[in-house]
Image (tube, rainbow, N blue to C red; front, side, top):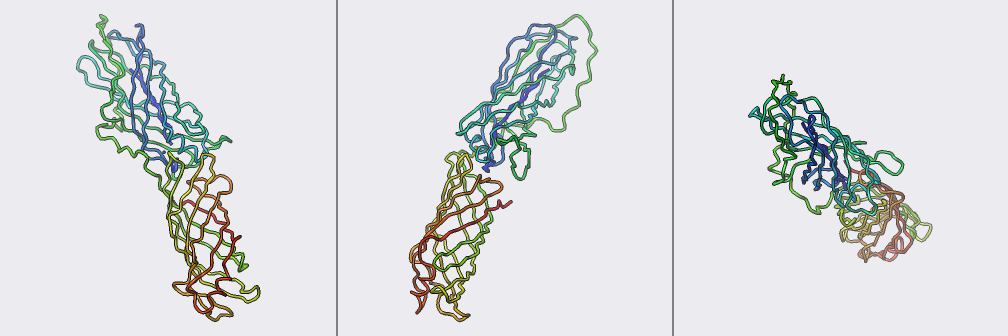
Length: 414
């Protein structure tokens, strides 16, 4: 009998995202007292990971298996090895989450066609995926899995030809760890994640063909293992390859902006929906800040309040580096829909806004986690105002000038 195990380097993801893909699964069979020959099978799969969604992997399975066995011989356990090629996109997705290693388990679907027309024997084999380093900067890399086939499950009852096919696999209990060795969180999965893999169309499944010869004895056949609850998946309809499809991530915003000229703070709240391109490490986004109120002073001593609204004039864009530094650039008109001094209206209105959009550049403090969030800070300049009524110039002086700051927290929206 044979045992197959496979690893996949895993989508963050992005994602998210991340993050990534990893798969190594292997099933192989060895036999009796016969001499063993090297066998090899290469397969391509598409696996669905956190962050990066569907991503391709390629696994190469090698083992030593006998080409012939005798009727009456039982198949013992056998050493196996599989090496999986993992994409740069997977490394990027895991890297932006702060992951530096990947490990876990893989379960492979194996089907043995029995000699003499006795049907087939499907079963599942679990293997351990060895810890692998994730390259930084992101690059394609390999992971290796080793294991043993289950021994003593089958005794050959008839002569003929036996075939061993690897028909599918699934990753489970996969753990991405950071530099401190702690699991990286991959919401909604937590410390561990699983990835379903589908064999690409046109891939060979045949690992080995064995001849079972008449050994001159009448063996007592062993009872075959119970049919698996989940039979091998039909690989004829693989998932769509997303190519470089961006990872979508949404965040809630809470923070404040200090207006230097007015010597006052304005609370900020809203949300941002991003589309992160793992291959480039860049994103664009739709930013929405809710209307708010600010308490200021006019000419340094007159108390004033203002109803403030924001209007995005161009998509926010920026980058998220493998070391977790997020940088963003936004352009927004700031509108004062109402301005009051001592509770009396003195200006503002639906058309009262900055002459030029404010250009706001923000940078994260510490590592920004795509599936958690982080803190952003920055400074910006406000131009003068227009269309604010008879006191336009006085109101304009209320906010115009450089040195304004923003501090905000982004929280991942589940």
